[in-house]
Structure formats: C-alpha cells, structure tokens
Length: 440
Image 1 (cartoon, rainbow, N blue to C red):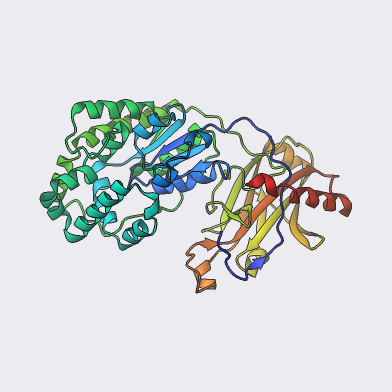
Image 2 (image 1 turned 30 degrees about the horizontal axis):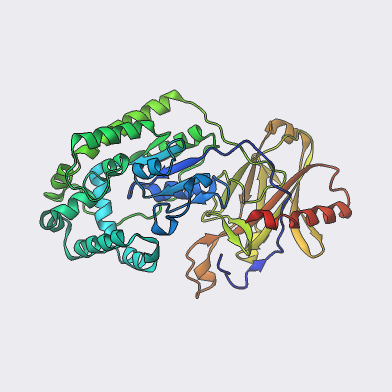
C-alpha cells in the first residue's frame, strides 16, 4: 500500500504458520452494473483469503490468468465467461435490481467525469474493441439528455440500458440489440442455477441471507458505495415508459429473482464456511466481521484497517475452553489518539489490555477468563472500538479519502501459562516474524 507518511507506527508483528482448515468454497460474483454490486463486492473481498481473489476478471489484463486457481472471482463478466473458464461448479452469486431504476442509474453513472478519468487511467486493462465502444457510449450520453439519447441513439440505448441483466445472465456474445425469448429462457435457467441471488431494493435482507447461505456470521450492509446521484424521478414524462419498453425481459427476470429470493429465505438453510482460528491469525485469512476497510499489503505484510466507523468486530474460532491469553499485533495507528481511546471486548465483555514489549516491539495482551471461554463455545467475537480519522485531513497531500483507525496485523491465542515469562514472549515474537515468506 502507499505509505501514508509519518504515522503513529508500531513495529510489525507476524504470525505462526496458517492453520490448515477445510477448503474455502470457491465462489464467483457475477457483478451486474448498478445493482449495488460494489457494496457487495466490498463485503465479499474480505471474506476470502488475501491473495486468493481475482477481481475485474474479464479485463484484458487478466486474459492469461486461470480463475480456477482462485477462491474468489468477481467482475462485470457474463455467464458465458463462467462457462468458458470452467467456473460453473463455483458458488455463483449475483444481485438484481428493478430494471428501470438500474437503467436510470447506469445512464447517469456513464455521464460522470470521474468515470471518464478512470477509463482513461486504466485503459490498459480493457479489450481495445470494448474500450472504443465504451468511449463512444460515454461521449453520446454526455452530449444528450436521457430522453434524447433513447430516441437519437436507439442501438446504443438498447445495448447499454436495455435488458442488461438478461444479457449478462444469458451470456449473449457481442452487442446484440434484438433479444428473443430464447435469450430470456437461457437467462432464467442460469439465474435459477445461482447459489445466491440478492435484490438491491432489499439490501439488508440480502446481506443477511448471503451470510446465512455462505455460513458466515451475520454482517451488516456496509455504506452504499459507487452510488449514482442526480437521477430523475419516476414522474419525468416519457423516460419511465421508454426505459420500461426496452427492459421487458429484465422485468420478467427481476420478478423471478424476487421469487427465488423469497424461497431461499423460507428455506432457512445454513451453509458451511471455515471460521479462522484465533491462534496464529493474520488478515491473510478471511476477515469475517464488520467495520473493516478492504485488507491490503504493507511492505509485504497483510494488514486490515478499522474504519470508516469506530466500531469493528471479527469472528474467530478456538478449541480452548480454559482461561486464555490473546495477543493483538498492530502495524499502525492513523493518529496517537486511536491507541489512547482504544477499547477491546470479547463476545461483548470489555477487557482491559496490557501493553507488552520485547526487543522494542509492541502489542496488547488480553486475559480472557475461563468462564467466558467456556460460554463462548468455540466462537470468539473480538470487538475493537477506536476513533477514525480521514487520511487527507491529517495529510493534506494524500489523495486517500478513507477514514482509518488502527491496522491489525496479527492475533495469537494460547492457554494461560504459555506467557508466564518474557522468554516465551521472545520466542513467540520470533516465530511470528517467520511467516512473511508465506504471506505472498
């Protein structure tokens, strides 16, 4: 990650070798544009091991990458990509949105200056033909208001705003403007084969159902990301009707998505997913919890910042049932006040940490009472409360607009007795250092 300047920085800690667990279920996210997919993607990325996720899989820069080597694959690809790459056995996730609302959001998203800058800045990742087409569409939507675009550019309107959800779920090759019922039937068949289908308008329910089906602790919907603003309302004459006309197949597909969603909710099935062990944990492993930024690498080490809110939690597993010692390792704090106001809890019980030092290193040690460990029944929810600060407010030259608190780099948990003397601490920290080569 880009260095943030002279932060309140702690020495780096590293963990024991990653515990072997049952395999992570391989998962693919078919991200349909303007369905709140970026919000879902933010949540999904942290729930799979670091370094085992392939994002923007459809980009030309990933043409020679085999997605089957990853645990999590995501992108604005169509179902045809899944078939072509042999990913049909993955858990396929997608999210659908009311078609006219999706089309409105898509049009005004294409008009944004920030998107134009992004396309130009990252053009090397796009197929040349697709890039040329994207630039043409963006030029036309910037020249015309929506109703003018629909009437003056019927072909571009049809392939960018019309039945997009059907197109992607069917896997239609090229820029076909005239869809037929066979395309819809194929899209419906693929939709029904998905492991999870979410609904944009039911975001909180969708996040809860996703967590249930994946076998994760129930996490909350993160703040909406990549939201399009300045959209017209339903009352703008002519627009709603014309968008409805070119989204007839998507209307049918959306109704089926709602039916599948309601059936899945009633089924109430709980999926399987390995919960990381608290012993020897680093953010290389799945970050199952709320209140975290997307994990990143800092000088070869995986870290995860708290933020943007001050409350964060992380779900961990353990086989211990007796009084235990948890050591938390932090790489950086964004501001000295973060550590001064830091509060920690286990399963809702506030615990008061001790600072531990050895050879100039710093960590926080929690003693978890035996009764609390027994009541936990193998699950520990680590709570972290710390203030957050916007990076660009503290460092005006930084382009980083995130609100950050403290960067977690590792956790270790042992039965009490292992940490009785400083010699064990010295051996433990030496072992934690040895994992850097395994975190790549």
